[in-house]
Length: 163
Length: 159
Image (cartoon, rainbow over the protein chains, first blue to last red):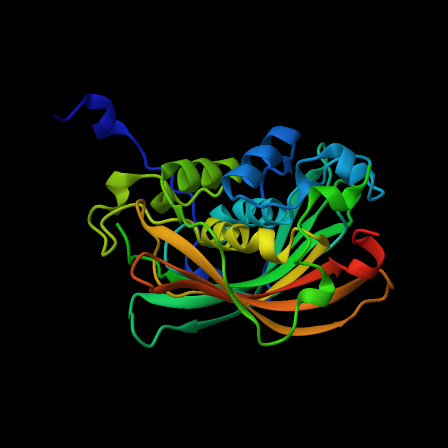
């Protein structure tokens, strides 16, 4: 069924391609994300991360914290998530992560932002329409303190490889 | 609060001897509850994780699980044995995704203690673990190293 609005619609694509990843290029990623207690409880319980620091406020206080900490793997995946539109949304397998370091603890109410730098890129030997890119991604809290730092490698589509 | 009453007694720093390999209790079947909810929660915008139609004509045929969620689930399955008495998660390295995880796949986690060393505080030490996540066919879907600051029983255990 061909509706008139579908015929008139202009695509609004949301991604970059292999050609866009000039080594050294810096991306200040969109949105930012304030992580709250609900985010943390959902993430920690669904992944069954069983350290009470992340779900028992009294236990966390007994370790010198003001309350529960945000699960570090939620910190990692949130910073990663904020980077996806700029880096990997065009598609291609997520191959790996190197040298991930967690920084200062994150607490409910903290706001994370993300920035990435292109480290390297190369052609794929097996897929002519794909390349492989490596980015250095850093996550920060609202005071500019680093919360996570890692290098990620992905397969990346070249321009024209997808409709 | 007596904190040692809330966590296990066999997973302090002193218990981690290099060479030990553990098969962790419990597997978890990955479904949209894990992949789609958590992928959307962390605002990963790659629709291959949440748009079934977009994946139909790809080699995968279906939505594939975001690797960050696969990693978190495998580490989660390993967490009670390797992180319940941790003071902090320090880092990850050599993370590899060896095969896609589809909705309906069931993951189990295995861990080897690679090495241990003193920390810059007397009450804890640093443990380097190697984790593997396998699916229901024992195919490796995830592997990688994780470094954790773990409490010493001598300081934190039952007195």
